[in-house]
Length: 222
Image 1 (cartoon, one colour):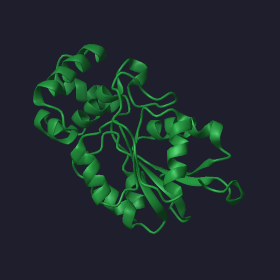
Image 2 (spheres, one colour):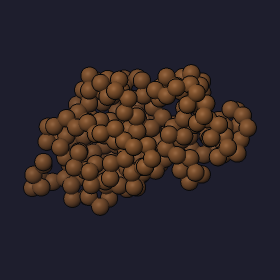
Image 3 (cartoon, one colour):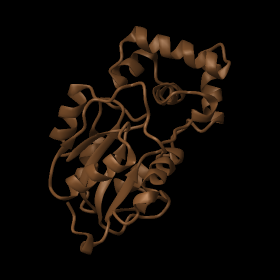
């Protein structure tokens, strides 16, 4: 583990949704002596080197790990970890192949998440146990949580809001088409809409449109 004399490890949270980033940062608040969130504002250029870039996969194309490869290649991030709900074996293998040093579950309590990041910082590769879908980590947040949407329902609605078809959603999330349809029916009921167009409009009005600044500035973009 890191020597406390060296100071807390610095972490950049990489995600296109501010509410998600804020939720993760909130989890770390009690552990500021061990972990410091060094980058929150996606409109500011990344200039300082961080110990760990923590890639939150919320509503990102989970079957395309290009972003992970970009982060691994970025000299401003010493190590990269993936922070996700989805523990499909192919996704774990792909992340490791692209150079990720951790694949961490969003169901980890804050103390265990901090310990996992410290282990990665110390040179270990850390793969969490596959999470139980029944629970979420305390302190996390996501678009739609206040309206009663679960984490996975919110991810699926975000993908729909981005214009993805049911087949696209199934491929990107590693869910079966029937499971996706079941999720969508539940989403429609919870947000009180009757069509895909209405769901997209609801998503746009409730923060489900991604802001790509945070991802892009890690790629060296605007």
